[in-house]
Length: 297
Length: 196
Image (cartoon, rainbow over all chains, first blue to last red; front, side):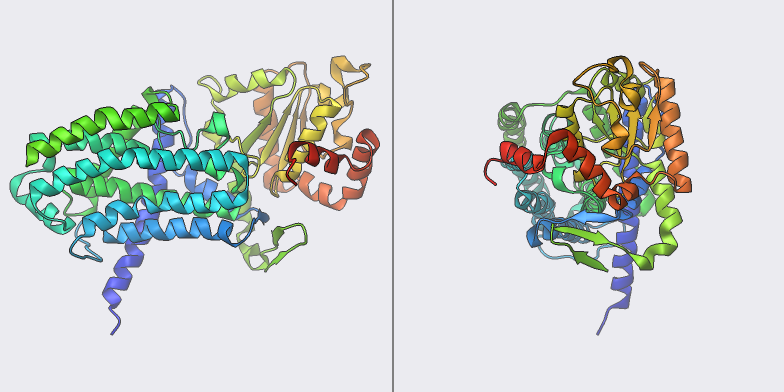
């Protein structure tokens, strides 16, 4: 038996998430421009960019894996999105969906790297090496923040976490989880690929990093993937620490709040080098994360 | 509708999307990504364009370091044979449709280097230039005006340098070979990519 309601909800959520993700990317560019006292592009600029990339007349391919990488990344982003309880839609759910989402959000980067490595460009190789090192560095504080959260609420289910926060107040109101949120927010900056952790796609250094060979329709898929990813990550943050949401508008307000913190941090700080980033991740966020875990025991 | 040529390039003719061509034209006009080839003195005119005073990002123009994603190729200043090789290689790496904006007097007729032995006098003989801005140096207003002209031409379809390069490839290739000698591409490739 086909569950038509579920299918319709999935399609609706996907369309909404892609559209809002593009708008988030537009907000990011516009807000950065306003901070630098520029006018900035219109909010729908990423949609125009994606349309233009789709309208390119040719696309260079470097073989099957190169084509497969962006599709793999997009698929992982969509899968992560469907496990997150977005407002009152809980589409897929399992007993430990927190772990599933937390690690599905990491998979897209691997997909991009898979494709980038097969292109054979030296800049891609440097970008991939940096990306993998950042991922290794951020796993430790990321895991500690999630452990603190899980220990406090005593459950792996995202929907239960949302329900418990509804009953007992948001996660941020608990002192230990406030520390965990700070740790998660630092990691979040790296997950979005914003400064000070935009070492992967450092545009002036290694000319876009893994994305250097992608153009045309491949880049359009990567843009769409980034839109879905940004929506899923902000929604994940809102669900874990800001009490989830009962409708899409409430979720949108919380997502934009999370996004603006990231944008403000990104527009102030310059870029770390890779060794500084790894040292930073293994020092301050890790210490804070351990304190958060000890407080929740 | 895609076919892989023997040089590994997939060309999409997308005849079924002819209907959306006006939409794509509008999108191409509104989102020009710049590959700035900052030769000579013109490169210094780009930062004022990108920063608060003239801010070209309000038209969707964005500096993009990767030639694969770029649309607008800025050649800012005089071109020597040595840089012309790089310009041609970068231009051929970019994906259709692509546009060239020649910036300053030097790419048009040599400018102040009119009697120099080592400056390419007329860039249009080697790669197709869509819009040229005269001046030495053109002020950011003039560059902005050139970009506006480029947008107008993209919209009415007269910015067809990439089509001209495909159709008249023999002509451009002959001129390039005259300047650099036969087989310069292979020589350059072997020099930079020693493992090939």
